[in-house]
Amino acid sequence: MALGCLAAAAVVALAASLVARNLADPARIKRLAQDKARAAWSRDLAVGDVRFDFFPLPSLHAHDLALGNPSWAHGRPLATAKDVVARLALLPLLAGEVRLKSIALDHVSVDLETGPDGARSWSFAAPGHPASSGSALLEVTGLEVSDADVSWRSPGALPVHWHIDTLEASSASGLRDVAIEVHGARRGHPVVVKARLSDLSRWGTAGAASDADLDFDWGTTHLAITGRLPLDGSAKGHALHADLQSSRLNDLLAFFDIARRPTAPVEVHLDSRDAGEATEMKPLSVSLGALKVQGEARVRQENSRTVIDARLSGNRLDWARALLDAGAEPVPPIEAPEMFHATPIAWPLLASLTARGSLDATFDSVRLRNGVELRNLATKSTFDADHWDMASFSTAMLGGKASGSLRAEGKKRTAHMRFEGQGLQLERWFRERGSAIPFKGGPMAVSADVAATGDSMRELAASLTGPVTIRLVKGALAMEKAGAAEAKLVGAKEEGKTGIEFECVSANLPFRAGRAERSPLIAARSDLSYLVTSGFVDFRDETLELRGRVKPLQGGSLGMSAIAGDVLISGPIRKPHMEHDPGKTPAAVARAGAAIATLGLSALATASSDASEARKNDPCGAVF
Image (tube, one colour):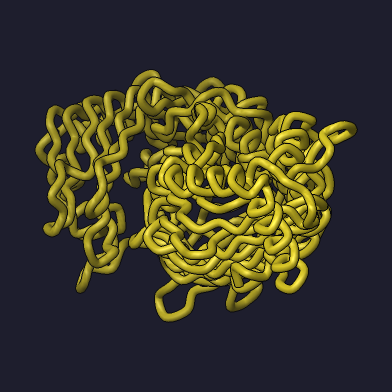
């Protein structure tokens, strides 16, 4: 036995001496490596110093390696490494065959680039030089990378950079049962990636796939993906389940250079599978704070375009709250007398869309930024690049119902809306928007067919063009001062008046570039009086100017309006004021003189005539 061991040791020593003599020639090693790279990948390989160590384990040490990019690439070499250690299998080496067991790389730089035609610099197949099957790489069971910088360039976009602190990968022979762990960062924001894949031996081969468990950890955000993962760069045959959970998304967003305020907790759960001609995501659920959305989506490619068809349903969407939960900056409140926000609308987001498809969405409740609540909202939309067409929407709102359509174009920043509302309570309008105006009842019929252009709601309002009509019946303004003022104007009793009891209010507003001007424009009738006005409502400077005379509905009484004449309602739309029309002062003086000369009979005759006119003709219908 002793002699046998001695003989074996002598054979190993002799073999090692012969192998070392062959591998100790740096020029031969460089030439062999360069020939292999050129034959297998059609790439140039630059190699610096090389040496072979047999003890304690056989290994090759190389410095300053650089693997070239394809000729069309504009970047640096595809990959460089300051130090490379390749550990070799001992027994094949004794037979004169070099087999890699593990590779360790330090101070690495990788420059990935996508060409205008979609070519990828990291694809090793070239015309006339098919890529090697890489059988030698199948024997590698370990990979270590430290201190690596990776950049990715694509046409028309800024380069994307990552840093890898450490990468460790291990596998069984033949790239099976692969385990990978990466600790990296992007712009100082760390990520830990862990992966387990059952089989990577056919990586890059058409139809190849592997069972996979992937885990991404950015700190407060965690993403887990499990299932069948394609290995050929396509989505064919995939069947994956994904779970994303985050107490706040800021770590993930910062990793991708997106700066946001702290977000609300987020959860996303979905199943995605290859359905032949399309990818199906079903079921799909998303939660952001208190908002929960469920549904399904189908994605396919048609004539080189992405087509998305989705159906979503949600519980309660509070628009202002959802924006804050998503990390948006708070929108400053509108200060009186302004009516519309100047905050930019997300037109660039719509303008950036390239896909087409459809979206059916329903929500139990949607609270708009102004406080108005839409219940049981149902919408049907189609989209094609930056054109969004909400062909129909229907909802319960303000105690009534509404329906219509909305079209928008992102690049032109235009919108066109049709709106029909019935039974919309003016009382609810004031209350839900937080107004202190004490109005009761007031069901309205509202119709609009308008178009607008602008970067904000303020600019859209200033360009509003199209007809808007409003018809209100049976409402009360519960203000004693207003009731007493009306009684004084028409000569009615002021005692017991708690406000103004409106029988109707009508407005016919033909907007053109944000301004509606007409004679008559707005009319109202109460239990005591009526008023038909002419003038304008202007959204460009958010003002109005209306002129008309408050007339009694009952004859035989003498009020201030019979003598004072027309009133002027003017100022900011949100807070107008009423006064005697200064332009009618000479006529008012003449009426006052006539009333004195006739002991008031002329004023009474005027009041009786006004009342008779109101009984014959509906003042609220006059504007139409």
